[in-house]
Image (cartoon, rainbow, N blue to C red; front, side):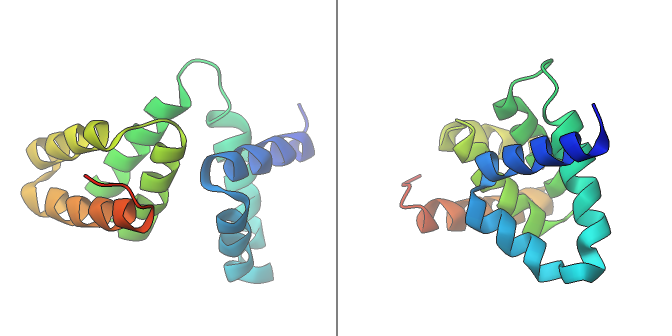
Length: 128
């Protein structure tokens, strides 16, 4: 598969996971300066790795949530909370992940992740 096809497939998958408006807003926010990074994200992250058949999208979403919480990347964590919900994760599954984060990444990381998850649930009208 050529790079342009990976890019198209990745962009389509990214919009499917996070929503067209969110992806377009994030891509526009970095403008031409960030276009090379967006090419990498679309082609390699989503067009290749996220599109692989070996793991369910829901599992990938939960894994990325764990990694972004561990790395203290709150903006990315929030994006991936939405992606996990869009991919079929439940608030209960997300809570279990947040408890694992407390154990393996520390309570401060889990506290922040809990707060962001609850904010995201509230924005979406999800009670937790």
